[in-house]
Image 1 (cartoon, one colour):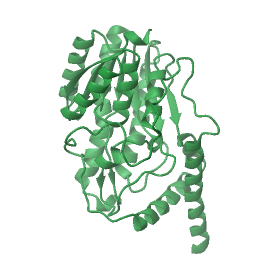
Image 2 (cartoon, one colour; image 1 turned 90 degrees about the horizontal axis):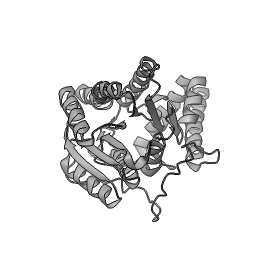
Image 3 (cartoon, one colour; image 1 turned 120 degrees about the vertical axis):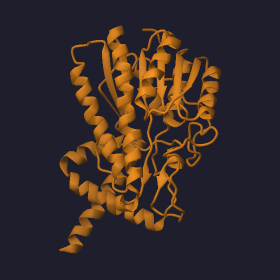
Image 4 (cartoon, rainbow, N blue to C red; image 1 turned 120 degrees about the horizontal axis):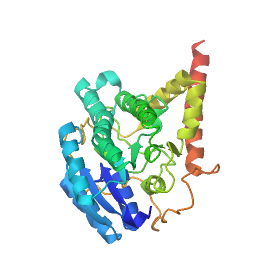
Length: 337
């Protein structure tokens, strides 16, 4: 399939990874339909797509509304004529100790991160079955493998997404041309922290080694040529292995790390962020909190799959952070004896 003839749907396409992926597909000449709650953000990304050489239509939709998503899918197919790839990328989070966060916010995170992806799949899988082909890309995260203290609902949603994908992949196993593809990045430099609800009392910031959203976007584009069930980007490969070896120890170490961070970070007031309403205006691709290289990202090579090399700095930093967390836990356990 030629990428210039691609018909792509991106849910959560108004900022961050969704925006970067839309632009990456646009550079290949794809025709896109972008969905999200905020029209200003969608219009901004559509403009960037046109500048990149693609075509993009925007449809405002609340992905937590199953009926609205079903109607959106039909409208998208009418606009595109067919749907080759659907990227489920809607997500949100609330940071804070579980008991300190109102239960309604935890519920909203589950609705936003898990139920919206199920709504997407329920709307597009019948279209794929009718076409007898299609690629459903499920944005998960390293939180699908490793517990996330101070983000319990987020972790629950990501573990749920992993299980959902595995079940759906099994059901569709006899359909050779219908693919369920999961993406597991570690921290990505997007406006996500600015959109997140925050009940830690501390200002959120990204750790060292944060991924560029363009790296994730290129991994999604590469799935068109060679769909794969699981794509790991950044630290998830390390966290997955450590979680299998010592899940409780790793979670305990991460919790101690978060406790230390919350005490040392600059103080701030609690906020619900964009948990219930979209951010005003256009948020863009990057957070603005991380210094990025001035040069434009390279286009993804069509003959290379998005594998993380062994000397990848992000992987190394992720491993160091995880090892440090585990080390803190070990030291703490020794001091308690």
